[in-house]
Image 1 (cartoon, rainbow, N blue to C red):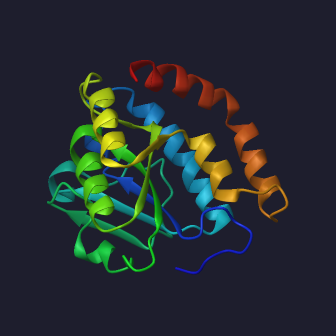
Image 2: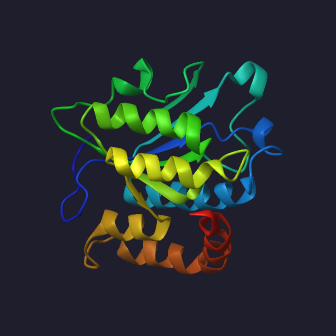
Length: 199
């Protein structure tokens, strides 16, 4: 994974965890998770950040939801393990050159938690995007985030992560990212007031 000159984060990646059609009716504020995920996917395209996506038991639980455009994901793997840290994804990473991995998806206390713990155990830095994760029971979310913060993950927001990715307004992509942030301001406010109300 090549480093980009002038950026604050040297080897970033975006993990999209099990945002599947079948979960739509069950997950608390599912649509808000989608909004944040779409914003980060657009940002990943602008900044040329690799995307890794998974489905959980696709044959039974369906495809990644249609709103998410992940045709150029490095991997879009199906799994039965709860963690995304499966061989087809892990082979792209090296503990000798740790990556900074942002995670969005579901469920906070199961697949997001186990993925985070595995990434930390393999020497990577993990950013849990608090406005991009949820669970069936909303009460699970703050407990999962507190556990992951204690384990060494950084719990942050999508906007904070985007600006940390860049680190400097002089990079060529700054204007496009600032435009994306502005374009999604209304959605971001709605998402934050809902999903972060439980933290």
